[in-house]
Image (cartoon, rainbow, N blue to C red; front, top):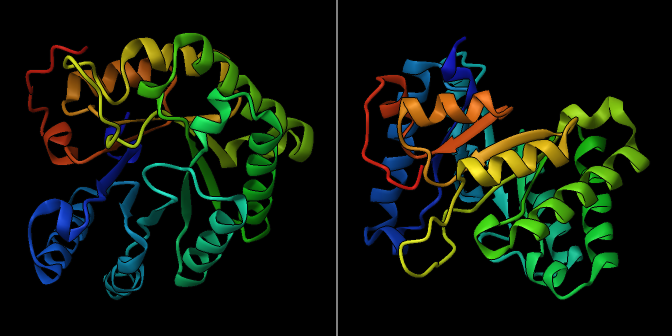
Length: 248
């Protein structure tokens, strides 16, 4: 098993969030690109503003590494129309995969028709342009029962509207990694939440994101059926560095 091909190497902090200049943030993105080419990661996950530069760099190196970006990140509470507008711009810039933050607050409030429309319209757009769609459900904001229900809902919408043959092009993703929790509760993927997603979303693909920082944890996630791991610790995972992470 080549664990590097499970890794979506991630840098999603804005310059403001990182406390650095725009130029310094761009350099961090370019450093990630160099690292990704060195270790042959599956994908580089970045903000949309960097897509053109990253694609140009990869093309110059004849690299087949994919480029992904996030849509309506990190809160997911924009309208479906705004999500589609942002997704179209990302596709035009050259994004291969789009990670949509689903409107999990609307889901919690019982607005199932909105979630149905969001999933249907976003998947249709991505499949029409031969792109992969991922839906971030933000597990830290949900109860276990809600994780089960939303995973089943996304699966139902995809299978009924696009058929099982397209299941390989749609992911359920655990987390943004940006959700604020209290009392040191994990804000990303845990073994428990990934078990729930895997059991209820398959045959859709699964992406564990948020808090996967070492090789041992990554292997556990893969054993649970994860197809991708979104992480800012790809190098540590590749080098089998063991980070202390009591959440797992």
